[in-house]
Length: 446
Image (cartoon, rainbow, N blue to C red; front, side, top):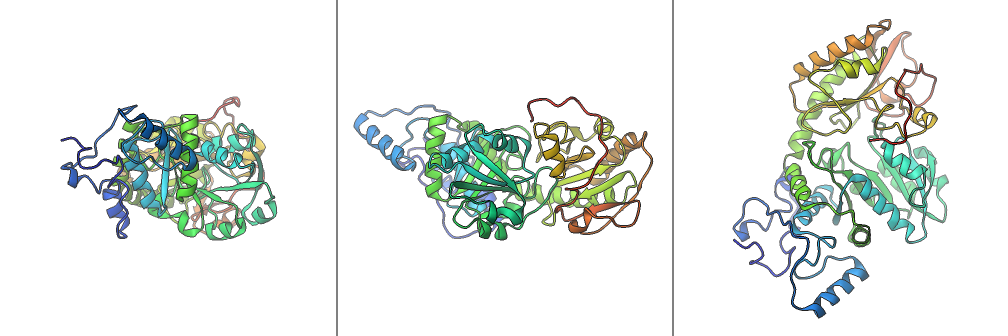
């Protein structure tokens, strides 16, 4: 059946809002509300790069309208860089899940962040206030000023004082990559005043928190991670109000960072199981965090107050040997997949961040980041126990970690006892550390 026969507008039905529905229901149905009317069950994949039109005058008017507002053109699609019906379904679904008016998808999370920075710079507001830690490449993009931005790094309490007349954006990530430090989004949004707050919600997903409801104007995702959920698609997306979405669409059109339609389809499919995946992986992660905290080979464990499937932990021994020792767990960068991944941030995801800045943000040389998947908890624990044994072989055993609050995790408890930063906060942001031998610092991070 011709899926365009039921409508003359490429996005009719796709953007339907309707009455509020539960998150689990939205995950399955948002972006798909028009399918039954078209006699379809699975969303169609539109791979067209261009679309025929015999009315060039009407095409000119539609392109002029897009150039003026960034709103999606009325009528059928025009060209792949202006928009794609399959990608629009994913954008609709993500916006609904985040409680935002709109969402704009990009080829990667970094392309999405770049578009936001360009959007603010285009208005002359090039100054950014940001809180570390952020994802390593986000940190580098801001610090290096690659897009003409200037950044002031501060802690959450210092945001208001760091604002300037030319400040165009405040950026936080909570829980943060890789330490899982959390910030109070409502308090941060209040401190921002009229300056837009961008919250990177990649780790939490809308299953655990919706930053728009707490005052953020922009919500960033590396869709490659939990939204896709299977390690087989690259993408990024910004959920926001329609006014800002229009600006982002125009930047996407001009710079070309478009999401491929097949990626849009895979991301839409990923959203349908997002709540189930996140909750199942989070339950396993909480149990693994508890066991790691009781293991004498582990110095510190960080796990967010809001839960989630990410764990950050420091070992007494050599973290590189732990990476080398896993057999079931995949030793790889990235996160949010159905399989469990482990990586050493100081060597990979945050390698590009200056050593002093990295350590000052709590990313120690002994820190490991674990993205928990959907495997059985006993199988994962057996693998971790074996890998921890390899890492501890050349190091004296410590004492078992103790359960406590994140606020206390950076301070001393019982002598010789490692800290449990169950709810991740500012733990480990200060103090000296023993340097672990690692590959020579390069110029790129993954």
